[in-house]
Image (cartoon, rainbow, N blue to C red; front, side, top):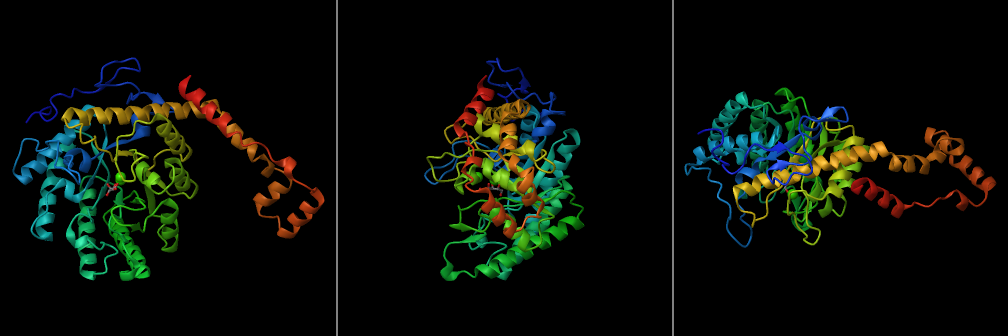
Amino acid sequence: MSKTDFFPGVPKIKYEGPDSKNPFSFRYYNPEEKIGGKTMREILRFSLSWWHTMCADGTDMFGRGTVTKTFGSTDPMEHAKNKARAAFELMDKLSIDYFCFHDRDLAPEGRDLAECNEKLDEVAEEIAKLQKSQPAKVLWGTANLFNHPRYMHGAGTSPYADVYAFAAAQVKKCIEVTRKLGGDNYLFWGGREGYETLLNTDMGLELDNMARFLTMARDYGRKQGLKGVFFIEPKPKEPTKHQYDFDTATVFGFLQKYGLVEDFRVNIEANHATLAGHTFQHELATARVNGIFGSIDANQGDLLLGWDTDQFPTNVYETTLCMLEVLKAGGFRYGGLNFDAKARRGSFTLDDIALSYIAGMDAFALGLRKALEIREDGVLDRFVEERYSSYKQGIGARIVSGEATIEELEQYALNRGEVLDAVSSGRQEYLENELNRILFH
Ligand code: XLS
Ligand code: CA
Ligand code: CA
């Protein structure tokens, strides 16, 4: 098959600028344009998600699939290889440099673990071949430890040691495949790592076992030459009621307790942040200030729905504030912007997939441009700097340096008298308006 057979309606997408009326063009994403000292593709590190893009067919709890993703084949292994060829075609047409996958997205399951591994190797071989003529890299790999019924009570937190061992074997193999495809990062999303009721759960043992699981995987990954990091992707609920990796702060506490902070970072998904009752920016900032910012699953939820809708991100206000946090964190060192997003069930054509990616990529490209403008403008940074300036000298400087004692502060307060005069307005509405000025000028 030629390189352009799977998405015949999708041309190679080019940058045509903000005034373009061509839906198959980028208005803000200009891959080779240098902004802030680097090209846009180097900063944004866009990634395709294999599961949504190549596999998901629109099936939901109430209805069957609406999209045909057979990619011209009925035989399961041929289908898996055609998915790979189609993915590479799409990445090429969209100028996407990375992809993320679960082991079971790449290849169908076999009758037993050995056959699963063989099938996975065969498809990985095909992907490695495709990589020879197209520089598509793995952003991260992960094992699907939530779909099969054996994982109904968890994988790395399963009450059953045999299931735990099976899950560990799956992770071992997936690390090998990630490495074979040149990937340097490996991800854990604990879809079933949580519980429904404490009536049947030993939470302490489950958490200790999870840490042992991650430690073994870390050690094996390093032995295999994995040079990047291991990501944990927080999510508060769904599918389990209580998920152990609730949010970034919870994950940070866990990593510290078990001595895993050095090797692990968080992969923050916008939709999971809002499910946890946080903003996307809160999660990013929490990761940044604790030194565990890693990667992003770029999508958006619907605040009127209480579940994980995985929509393509188009809210520029959000993408701007996200990119501002990414810039503050020093950019992506290991991760990137992985579109863990799917077109709506009613957007059922293959063209819709490309149009969705264009929408998401342009929203982030515009967000990046605006975030750089915000930094250059400086009004927000100056306001924050001024707001905390009392910690630069006098008693504030002594607090920050750690020299001040509580007795000294008491004496200071006694001498100083009422301190309400030290307090200034937070000027939230003014700042929000300044943000609008930069966004919409
Ligand atoms: C599900 C998660 C999942 C992870 C990878 O909600 O987002 O897709 O990103 O296992
Ligand atoms: Ca995700
Ligand atoms: Ca999600």
